[in-house]
Length: 541
Ligand code: ADP
Ligand code: MG
Image (cartoon, rainbow, N blue to C red; front, top):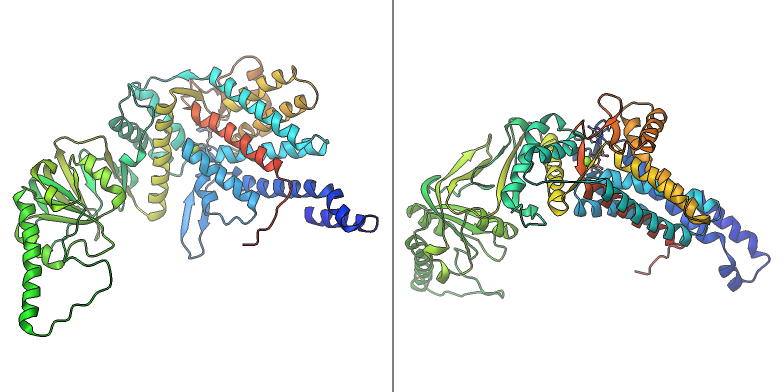
């Protein structure tokens, strides 16, 4: 609709103005562009609105090649959605940004941005300049962060019960919510294992490796005492169970060397051929013996793209020497394995010495059903800060979603390590900010006051949507919530299970401060940048 108006406006002026003037006098064009941008972005926000909250719906996403994903996670839905409009893509990026910053609240951030865009559209139609709206929104967002900070309460990382409650809130809204009794404590324990609560201010989630295996049910998932390696042994008659394991992690290859450039060796008689083969045998045997003499009996080999990480002949020798071989360890996982197994990655044979090996009581290959196997290492002597989690699920869709949900729960705990403060959930933070901002707006003058009010009203869309998705009357619930907050009950939120407004701290619906404050901040920032766009220019390339 918007482009048509633009064209009509431009056409109308053509009769009265010459070409060059017309371009500059076309005041309607920026408005038209802005309007169509807002419409496109709002469409994206509307698409995920119904999946907000514990009673939100899930989406089934079908990809071009027929793969199906079932999810409730805003970032996943948007990531897989085919979005063409450039502004709509900004909302996709917005949820990605929230995913990186906080990990949870990815639906909230997009719904908030949609509501703010709606507010901006109304303000624009009142004739307020986009720059004015943008600036006011920025100030309102900063104030909102202050309000959230004031209403938050500190978290003690040694209080496991509290941490579990927060992980549970995040899992509540997922497909796998009925397993939150297992997954929430698992997330808390996993994070606690890899941090030092006293001084760490961030968590490296790469040090928590979730290994997904089809089969059994989610309830069979476990946090592994020791380490899991998502590979099978190479077999070839080699051991699949090693007691008193000495684990080596190598980054060089056990195969005949190759030159960097394309080459050919021309052999003219069989004695030369014999010599070449013997040479190769000798070369490999030497390496294998050296590995054995360092005391190693479990060997992990990094994946190689240049040449075979390990050749058949080397495998044969290693099997003879009773060394368990695991190949194709991803380069990105080297740090993780070296930490969890307490060994040092070795890049050249000369440095392969006994000190670089990790020790464990037992390394064994275990079957996880069907053809899939993992290697479990128990009794690791000096493990670093890393943990493995074995996640089970009876079908692929559940397993994938369990993985994403567990990731969200881990992120929630990471947020608490980053910023040790919590807020009540269920729409309480958004409503409190709305009520307080509306009061503060009265001290502002002119258009700014309008903008602040609009900003405050827009935030109420979160409790509104939570109520709507839970099948409650949204208007009734939101007005009641507003009254409670106006009366100073800042912890009141929507209890979607019982269907009325209550104190969320008593209900143990708690979430990290960082999730809510980052959602408001990032949404406002995204809306501001959309407002500032007044034209879309096609690039030549
Ligand atoms: P997001 O992807 O943004 O995290 P969710 O679907 O996880 O979206 O929903 C999060 C919202 O649901 C938050 O506003 C949170 O406060 C609310 N919420 C979670 N659990 C409950 C609950 N038991 N009662 C009420 N609200 C809840
Ligand atoms: Mg969530």
